[in-house]
Length: 345
Image 1 (cartoon, rainbow, N blue to C red):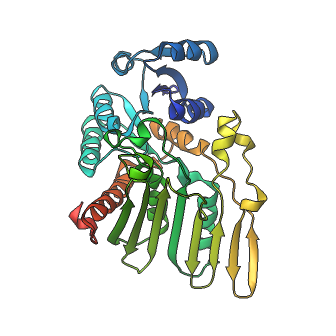
Image 2 (spheres, rainbow, N blue to C red; image 1 turned 90 degrees about the vertical axis):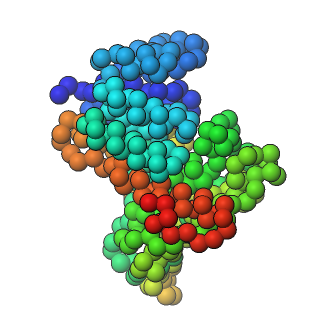
Image 3 (tube, one colour; image 1 turned 120 degrees about the vertical axis):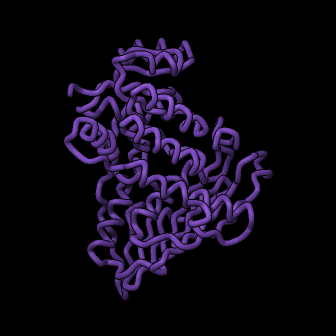
């Protein structure tokens, strides 16, 4: 099979800075085109990238040369667009979150199976440097048995554009929580048993989505993961705070790849020394040299999966479990009670 032709649907921040950029770097993929309704953006794309442009989604699907569509669209469009694309014979990558409900996820998975099309979700933060470092520290036994994961992501201020609108699936818990919940589920090798969540009203920022969210996940092996997102944080907490039976780990700051990518050179990403993880063990503090992150790996794997050279790294079924956890948290917050995943799944 020749290099699959890829069209990115949407040319906002995600489409421009993440998907078109990373697809363009993947040796096994051909950035064939971009779809956007904005005429000025199409002119810019044709001038700067030299690829084909489409003024709407249907036009991209109608092109028989298109093999894979990447959905860099508002969250509420992921499910209907993914299903339509697979019905048209296209493979699909959708930005995270996969969709807005477990019912939509199951419809997407069913369409993928029915039409024998690849379906994946852009969980690029499985290749964050801090996440890869955490996995290695755990595997090497430096924390003993981790029993408490705390992950935080937030700042003060209203989310931009549609991300502040509930109708489009806005809110930081959908947007950023989709990454942190996914990471927690990757790290804890045990069934999820209980979920309790509390969402703070967005009224203070004139939002119709939550302004602050805390979701507590308890697993069958006793491990607890606390996922917190905020638009009300005048001062951020550490991104990671992990307790284990033999040590603890604190990590400030986010993976540096996004800033480097926006600047046009993701390979120049370097972790600031003040953001290095600190490992605390009895009478000992160690600064941990980070494992470099590599978001490039996501689309390289997509290329290899499409051409039969590798198994798909981020399957829709694995991300379905993230949707279960997110939906359980939203139900818990709405009804102010502990929820079990079986109520969702």
